[in-house]
Image (cartoon, rainbow, N blue to C red; front, side, top):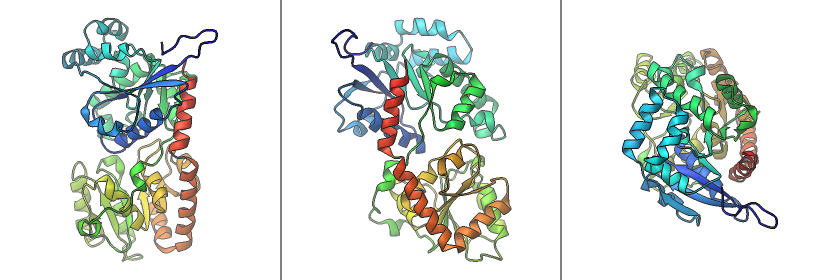
Length: 399
């Protein structure tokens, strides 16, 4: 595969494809943008690149990249058939042989003759179509946190298992965020370690933006507050953070919390808990906040406090590091590895543990200043350039 054939005196150009599916949301979308930059800056004397996109929303984000861009047909009927085939557990090897005969997306991907197609999200198309795939697996929390229905309901668990089992069986390799992520894939799917590649997350690019016009008209923020940007899923654990604030009512009567996130899922129960404990004046619910406004909310915050139960790692601590915002996070999975000594760690099950960290952050300026300094050092050591270099190394390791 690829551009030029290997041979004496002939330089071999490896061809890399980046698969851009339907526009994801939140952190997943930012990860796609990070991947676009990394693939778009591969050395042109070693690689040719094609961006394959299934939605026109990607066109604007590919502006400025000189690499080939190809619109991929969705193939609704064949996609539906492939989904049915996957869900019923039919032999995937057979499907991979027959789908190029009638699946327009399979034909389009195979026509590019890429040495590797990178899939930034664990989509089923990465294994249903017989292309050499390098697939990002962001977490296996449906396995490790089965108590939360958002990822481990019977149907959700079934669908994730079907996809991930096939990805680990058919892909050339997978990308994970940490050593713990690598361990999880090996434990759950017995995948060979040499096919699992670690590539830690970096802060999204919007965190470097300046304050947008009209910010103070859109938001009324407390002068001093703790910040937690997260959708109101049960696993985000807003409840324990609110309970820590309840515990500290007498000790820190001026304590303020600011939450962002759409009014879905466990939002109503969080609001109810606040009201029942007379914390309405202490907790601000901002609702959905667009990316361009997030950096300023971080910059004005006293600290980020993130009591999530999910990992292995998360993006908000990295965002806070960029913004100069002190951090306290759950001491779970690979979070200690991700933040190092640049954050306070606590047990997300323990209200008193969370409360102890809050007191330090709220009252100790020296602790906060030290965390800010260490956080900035941490993100300066691992950013887009280092991400790009590591992806280049991984591509070289994939057979």
